[in-house]
Image (tube, rainbow, N blue to C red; front, side):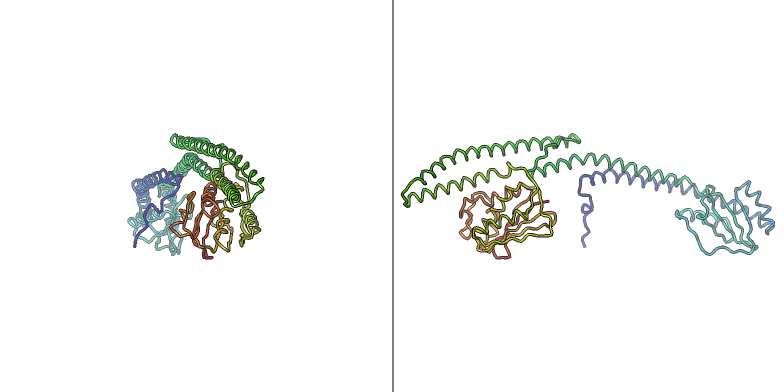
Length: 442
């Protein structure tokens, strides 16, 4: 049998581990101090006090035994009260109680019982719980029960409770200070992680500022510089592609107009028109791939409605595609609707191009929204599924990614999905073909 490792029980968060580092030594120190106090001081003092009281009780018994009886108890009461602080009465005909009432601190009872047993030759009974400030001791004698009332502070060291109280208070105060301090140290790291996650989803965090310890501020500043460089690179890429688009679309438009004005129809003219349309389509895919999700701000959108609209548009084109939306789930998510629509359109179009039947579903599960696109086509071999996401990838003839495009559809879809903090995975469909699963974290 293998025992679980200690690290499996350790806190996983920085806050938990830091708290453990500070609180555990404090707790161990308090336990050690408490044990040392009780073992070396409090127990010793209590034992000596109990021995002293037991000795006084033995003296009282010796005085009583000189002339036992009710009158003797009344005669001794003023003397014992004045000199020993012990009040005594005789209850004729009574016997000792059969029940034992134990104190919360059982060591008190054990100490007193041991001291009385060593000093007395009579049966006795005592109660340390009935009176807050006194201890009752009963001794069986021939005439009945001799009842003695002794002040509690003569029997036990009462400072032990005060010591425990301050130990607990000090522990709670130190723990509270540790919680506040560690929380203030962990919060900047949590904000940095949140800003990084938001940036990974394509969402900006304009109010994020470096705070916390020096090392945390350095990491936050490095993240801000990295984010600035990445945004500048994305902006430069988008600007470059926009310029290329403008420069290339103008001559393409002129070519289309010139071809449209030609009156004759032959194979060369039709081939030229097809080439121009292909160039325009390729240019559009290039721009979609390069533009990504940089030019759109996220807004709340119903993923189920987006899926239904895309499926309806595709079905109007003659494709056999159906949609199944989870009706009892909240599928609203803050996304870049246009980019996400392009992502799902690419997935559905890819499935329609290679299959006769396509099924699309959307649901919420385990803190994420899933959109599955399944088909009954030839599918993609398992060892080629990651290759399918590479730009301009060419797969085998069973499912050629270059059919009707240039191989950027899945690359664009995954780029959009990861820009929202999610991903796209490919697997085998229950329909016999390919299943593309889009995951969007909520």
